[in-house]
Image: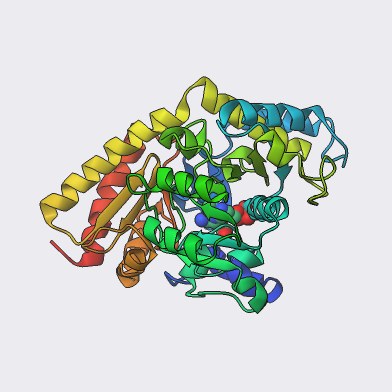
Length: 431
Ligand code: KE4
C-alpha cells in the first residue's frame, strides 16, 4: 500500500504533538512502521489519507460496535447539533441516557456521566475509598483502567505495548496503595485480602480482560471475586468500559450473572463521542457531590451531542438485540479460524468472548498477563503488517483486542478469513 501522505502527516504531527499522536498505542510503537492517518470511516471500513481502504477490526478501540457513521447515530448528532453543542447545564438528553443505562445494566440504579473511561474508573475508586475510608485497591496485572495514577502499575494496553511497567510521575505513596494479583488467580486475591485486612477499599477488574489481548475469566473467577469481596466488606468494581453494551446489552455482568458494587462504562456508551460513566446502587452513588460529599466534576460531562449519540446507539443495540447476534457471528468466524489453525498445526492461540477476539502467537493457553507477554510480539508485528498490506486493519499491538462490528457483512468476514489465513502463513513463513 502506498502511504506517502500518512508518512508526511506523521512527520508533521511529530512537530506539534508528542510522538505525533494523542494516544500512545496509535503510534505503531510495538509493530513498527508509520501509523496510517484516517480520512474517513464508512460502515465496517476506514479510508486513509492515501485512499487505501481497510476492513476495521479496531472500531476506534471498541466504541463503534455499529460501524462508522451509522445513520441512526449521525442523525441523532445532527438533530442535537441544531440545538447547540454544550450548555454546562442539565439537559433532557443526559437524563434520557442515564435512564437507559439504569434500564440495561443490572447493578446500576444511578449513574454519573463523565468524559472518558479513565474518569469513570478514577471516580469509582474515589467512591470506594471515600465511603470505606480505606486506601488500598487490588488490580490485576495486564488490566488497564485508564491512565490515572492509581492504575499505572503493570497495566495493559499502551503501557504493556510500550513496555512501561509503571509510569514516572506516580508518587511512591500511591504505588504502595495499589496491590497487584495475576488475572484469574483467586488465591492471590485471598492472600492479599488476608495480608491487608481492613485496608482494602476495592478490587477493580475487567470482567473480560481486553488490554492484554482478550483474556476470558476462568470458570468461577468472577463469582469467587464477588463472594470474597462481599465477605470482606470490599467494593467490587467491574471495569466494563470495553465489555459494557458489547457482550450483552447489560454487559459482562449480565452475561456472567455477577453483580458488582460499581461499574465503569465508556466507549460504546458515547457512540463514538467522548463519554464515560460510573454507576451503582443508590446508596453508593448518592455519596457523590452534590448529593454527597465525594467530589467529581466535568465541564463537558453529559454533553448533549455525546448523550444523543450514545442514546441512539444503545437504543439500536437493544431494539435489534445486536450484541447477542454479533456474539453468534463472531463465534462462527472464530470457530472457522480455529479449525483452520488446528488443521495447519500453527503455534497460534485464539481467545474469544463474544465480539472480542485476540490471536496470540504462542502454543500455550493465555489466561493471564504473564502468558500473554510470553506470546511472540515479533510475529504479531509481521502478521499485523501483512494484514495491513491486504486492507485489514488490526490493532497495532499484541496487547489489544480485535473487535468485530455489526457493520461487517458475511462477504466482509469471508474476505477477512482468506486474508488472515494467508497473513498467518506469511508471518510464520509456513506452507
Ligand atoms: P479512556 O480513558 O481511554 O476512554 O478509557 C480508559 C479505559 C478504561 N478501562 C478499560 C477496560 C479500557 O480498555 C480503557 C481504554 N482502552 C484503551 C484500548 N484498550 C484505549 C485506547 C487508547 O489508550 O488509545
